[in-house]
Length: 228
Image (cartoon, rainbow, N blue to C red):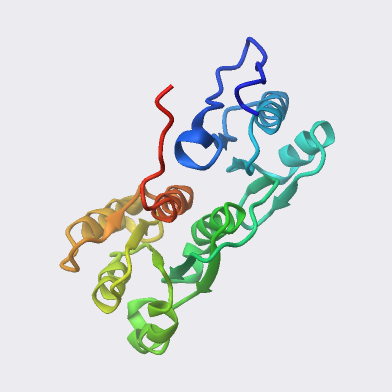
């Protein structure tokens, strides 16, 4: 389909991304007007076959967009607008959250992952201050194909999970915490220097980035990219 559709001249959208990476371009909501988002979403819907998503979009803006481009669903907790969500496949992603304050970032990761075809298991409020909470859920976490760990403060939960499972661990530092947490920088540095080898770290508060990292794992073995 993307080879037949020509987008409006005022947009430069990557309509070939679905062929290259298995998922259409995702629209970042902040900084765009409802009309700009609607135009981009409509173009992607016409030019691709897979899910079309808008991240970090508030409820009022989403309603304005849906008035122009109907058929989508707004996921409030994830701040995510979705058209044509993918059916759940065989890949299970665990989304593990340290505390309630990390919930919005975890919801973004879970909403993204489920919208693009992953089965999602959410395990909330199992931070290391009560270590028995995470130890009681080890069996559930080990059953996942990959695990996203969302934590602020000192970010220790990523190291704990990384030491307990063999699956890929994608750590998301959040901006939760008091002064020396430095709005997520402390958690990010702790995750990057984790003694649990091989933990992958994405940007602060980026549930989106974590879901997309997991999506790349679902594309293995490497997709065959057309040469022409």
